[in-house]
Image 1 (spheres, rainbow, N blue to C red):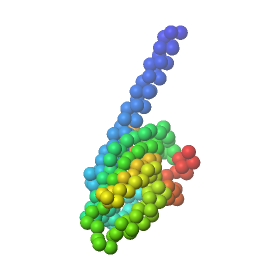
Image 2 (image 1 turned 90 degrees about the horizontal axis):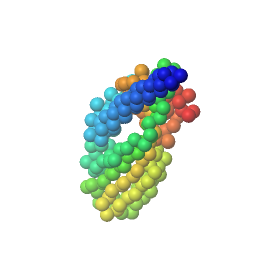
Image 3 (image 1 turned 120 degrees about the vertical axis):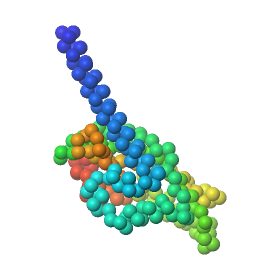
Length: 194
């Protein structure tokens, strides 16, 4: 009886170690994905998106993304990217999915403001940006410093991880809550119900 209990214990332990290695690989690939965004490596970042998503991105979308990060009037800086939780890997329709809850800080500093961009204008702009950050980018905190012309925001974002084998080559998708209908184009309904 002790031998059977010992064998069952070893099997359970080895399954946990195997699962942990898979989660570690998922976490490593997620960190690599986010670093391409932080380092503004847009072509490399595209490799971390699922193929069906990349097919829908056109040159205008990629160009717009590059313009946001390379805007001479705004410095964008992602800071303190942290994984809060990696959800259980689920097999749905022959693919594997997990939801990664992450948190990151975003700093945006306006520079070289034009004369027409007065404090009144900037304050009005920040009110609408605050709503946009909360409704479309999952911001849980938003602050604007008029002296430094800097927005500091904290975002908690669910990011969907997708793999063909559940072990490697993870791809990632994320959308703000304002774009929920877009999820249904790229993710199975079963996953979105949870």
